[in-house]
Image (cartoon, rainbow, N blue to C red; front, side, top):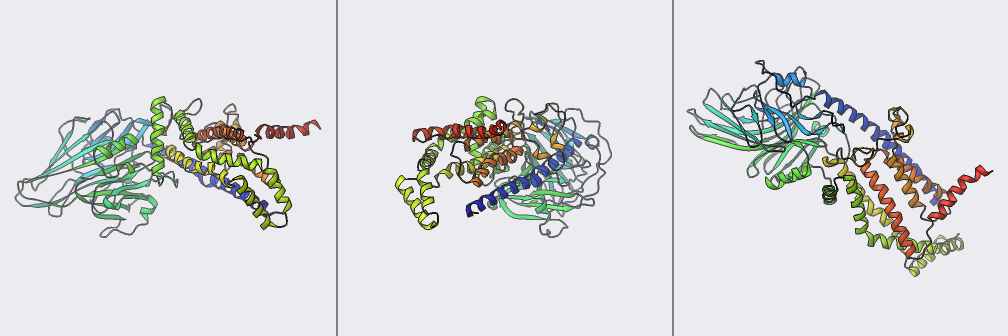
Length: 619
């Protein structure tokens, strides 16, 4: 067997290994993770538009107060209850904006109840809206906390402090002021305002009405109890996220945070940054995030920490601590911090980055290493979306633009390929003439290439060009919330999800779900668009002469099948792009071949293929 045949067989084996590995280690676990995530989210749903039940004087269970600037304190073991019950046990100020609904807990002054009005769990408009933050006592507490610490300051506000509010609801343009005073004469005032999107502004002021100076340190934090169900994709970061001054972007997964070194003076582990200026710290999911944002002109200490509680759950926390301030009798000090809690909409996040001058806040969205390709690609897609109202059409138009942009390079590549086809008989003659002398064979071929001005690797360029674009589009479809639940036409109701149809139940005509079949279920989820993509890839290969070597012929015959199954679990938008790109490539290649006087093999190859399939029936 010739060496190149051996290499091709190895390529087939590796391709199948990639396909099997993808399905076994990625697609199947991903479906299970999504199922668990949906169950977890549905278990914490509540109707945010329903009125809050009367407040109960009983004390809310949950985590003990935090230690700002360093690590969370040891959590208690709360009794898990429904979200409705947890919300009912504390007096609250309602939050109502065009984008979010929820409440502020007057017991502790925490922002621990936020739901996103414009986002639902599934494409079904009747499905529950997304619940982002939840109070302690629920299955998955997640909240923001603000306050002060000081060794000699006496009794300071904590999670049990009941604040007094000047109004019953918080709306854009109508801030809420909370007040409380301790026995040492410190009067605390917290003014909370919110815009029409997802940004809270928190102004904490302290007046020293006592007779002795006190030293206080302001803090803000985001705390999440229990490790959430994550998607586990390599191309997506979920967990702790922040920009800490000149240290830049910091992304630490939950698992990696658990492995960090212990933080001095505590039983928590984590990462600390001292005396940094500008940035933010928080916790991110795929589409949602919660982050505290300090004064961008003042130095602060930032930290990510993880701590084991009395139960099996850990507490994950992102904390910002400002500089200590000494407050003389009769003096007042004030600090302003911000809190983002919402969807990672590109325009909204960019607007906060620009108007509030938050250092690198746009990195809250995981654009990845190819930021310089991924974000501009999204901007172009978003432009066409606003023109035509459909991201699927935008993908088709961007594909055409990319074809036009790279036409000169593709033209040279296809022209070189056309010349290669024109000299194919001469190349075959050289191989036969020097069959026993590989050195002379290569020299003769290179001389032929020089004579005909042929670049033998030029045909690789169209494929190489597609790789970064393919990855960038995959990233855009995967991480941008604008693509979430974005419909195309017909049965494609979510371009960011795989094609929901499958040929193995006749595209829904048969009453069973092949995806539920153990082990091989994901092989059976082969929708209309992946099949169309496979057909277009097959047509593209038929544009070229059939290789004389039987092994090569088998490789090219099976490649569209392999890619069809492999892309079956990819986002539908990506498969639509690939199919459309294949069709454009067939048209482009045909045009260039015709212009160079090279015969287009498509129709002859199709006739040969179908005549071979029909011949056994005649016998």
